Length: 197
Figure 1 (tube, rainbow, N blue to C red):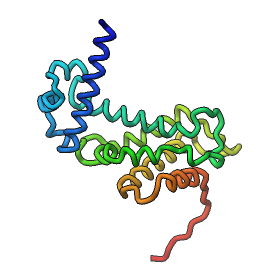
Figure 2 (cartoon, rainbow, N blue to C red; figure 1 turned 180 degrees about the vertical axis):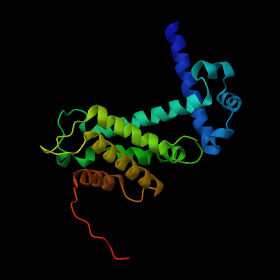
Figure 3 (cartoon, one colour; figure 1 turned 135 degrees about the vertical axis):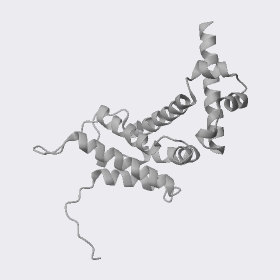
Figure 4 (tube, rainbow, N blue to C red; figure 1 turned 30 degrees about the vertical axis):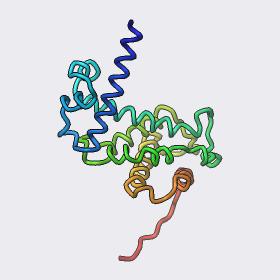
């Protein structure tokens, strides 16, 4: 009985999330009502509240699902390794950019003004958290770099690059971006010239 009930809950939760996203493609978050959602999904308000406290809670769950999948894609090229040499990474194993291209509609929606939360920041924070929890960079002996700031710098840079690529409507191929991300992770620049004004 419990297993059947759990399956029903999971099914209704999935249907409500899908209906919510369908409506979100059509109108801003603030204009979507719970009544409209349950009517479209063929459920009642009781079913909605059995799954979510509020529509904000539903939005947060949808965002967490998306970020979790994004992090899984980041892990793909090295998930079976304990030590990773960035310059030896096979860029064919980097599925992240293909994933974004395949889910372009969803990411463009979440980056749009249709939702009230700062999805850009949430993407960067999710990558930052992954770096802090799972990475331990091998730094040169005697360096004064704080790993905390290194992780923040890199994760927010990667998020910014991804967001710009999406906003530019994937102006370059996923393969090109995979190569770029590896090169950027390896590049260190010591000198720059100030262009004349």
